[in-house]
Image 1 (cartoon, rainbow, N blue to C red):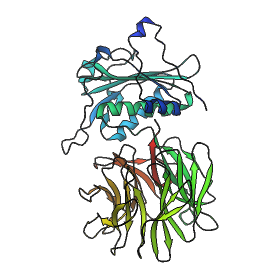
Image 2: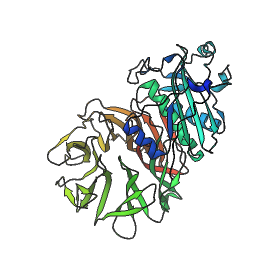
Image 3: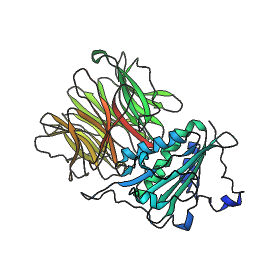
Image 4: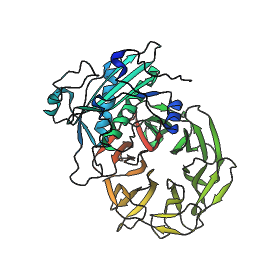
Length: 461
């Protein structure tokens, strides 16, 4: 679908001072063109938009307190939906604490006017969000928001978006990202999607389909029909492609699927067993583990030439490889030392360094953060499965959650959250959860039935 862009009208003298052009970098402009969204800044009252770059140090230790924020009802068409999505996003963000709308004293009649700050101070709100959603003359949906600092009484952020009405829910995520970034100084993660394995049917005959959803569980769409067993989907960091494994009548195959076009191609048909295909940071290669006899080693494949390169040559099992964000290193799981542990080595192969040393513990499914500062993993110790993070040198290990059969962490595009799945066993099935990397909160991500193997994609905007 092709989109056109225009700037908001400034012909009304009463509105002229409210809007000003938004200076976009080339990368930002390209992003807006690719998403079909128009974005222009809503100018602040009093000129205080840049007075403070952020308000919250999210890495603060035990003294951390989330920022109370009031999300008032967006006026107009689909305003209730947008308000609900933004509020729910903030609830799951850990760092922002949306106030209960039932406690609001002031009803915002005009979202362009400054709220009565004394009313919001009584609720201990530090920020107030106001906005509207309306249908433009050409049928497109125009969404505006303003973020107000209660302490100063000033507007500190504002934005307008014009898009097809079918994108309304996505605009709610983009609004959430803009506010999250303004308050925390960190990139948002709300305008992103997760590919996962949808599991339905009885446990002894489970149907596994490839599916995709918004990061909050909305907009679920099925990408396969369930005729093949699918596992380990992985998002490309540079495109809307997904690599995954499928088990049909023959050997396991690795497929590349373009989410937007639905076009699917076979990367390779490998004898024996293949594990965990994952993209390189530039999206030009995939790395995987190929089983040969009792051993399993790491290989890369150039997606253009289809040539493979062997990276490890051991008698053990090397699997679950993941690139560092700059592509220079790999983290992977290996039992070469006698038990499952996590190792780091050059992306071109060579010597590997063990980085996991928890006493009496086994480590698996490592994945590198997009920011490069942490590696997430699954740890099995004493019958409990924990999801944790550690620094790339193995220091600073932190267990975020622990229980029965947690597995398969995947990072949000801003590196501040991990998603994983948990299977309680018995007649039940796996469910998908997310937690922040500091272990401050954990939330279930709703899926239509059971869900496993989540893989978080890049930001869409």
